[in-house]
Length: 279
Image 1 (cartoon, rainbow, N blue to C red):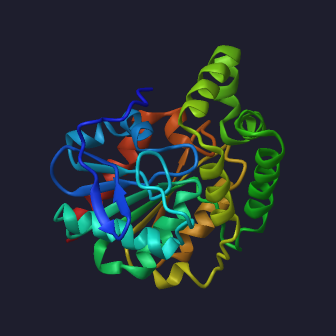
Image 2 (cartoon, rainbow, N blue to C red):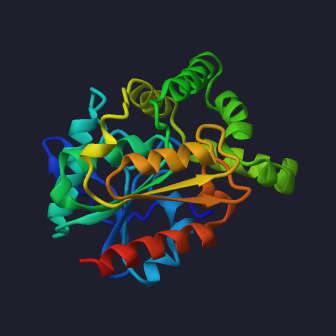
C-alpha cells in the first residue's frame, strides 16, 4: 500500500485552528471515505481506485489525525461533523455518500442524523454497533485500549490482527503478510490518536432507536467472518433503517475491503447506482 502523503495538497480551513488534509480523485457524484484508527486518508487509495473511475472520491484526515491540524483538546463527534461540513463547503460539494468502516461507522451514522441534507447515503462496512446496541463492541475496544496503554501500538496490533482480519486472509498471508501489515500499521499509527479513537467509539451509546431516524439509504457490508457482527446481525441491523439493505462478503472479516477490494467496490458502485436511479 502507498501510505505516502501528498505534500503539494493544500489544507482546507474548517474552523479556528483547524485545517484538514484531503485528497480528491475522479469526477461525478461524491463518495467520502472516512478515516478511522487503522485507515488514514492514504490507506483508502488502494481500495477506491475503481470507484474513482465512476465517481469523485474524497478522503481526508480528521482533526488530530494524520496530517490534519492538532488541537489541544480531542474534538467531539459534533466538532468532527462541523469539520466535514466545512470541508464540503470549501470544495463546493452539496451532498455526498459516506463510507465508514469499523469505528468510523459511528461517525457516518451521526452525520446522517445531524446533517441529512448533506448525506445522500451511507455505507457501513463492519459496523461497530449491532441491532441491539454495542455492549460487545465496547468491551472489545476497551480491551484494545488497555493493551495499547499498557504495551504500546505493536502490542495492540498483535491483539487485534486475528480479530480484525478473516481466517482466510490470515492463513493466506501467513507470517510475511502479518509482518507487512504490522509495518504499515506502525508507520501510520500514533499512540495518542489510537487511544482517542478507541475512547470515542467505546463511549458511544448506540440504541435500536437511532436507525429509524435516518432517512438516507443505508448499506451494511459485513464479512461472514466478522467477529463483531454476524450475517444475521447485519440483516437485522439493515432492517432497522427505513431504507436499509445489506451485503455479506464471503470469507471476509471485520475490514472486508482488505479481503476483496474489487467486490467491496463493486457493491458500493451498485448501491450508488441504485440510489442515483431513484433521484
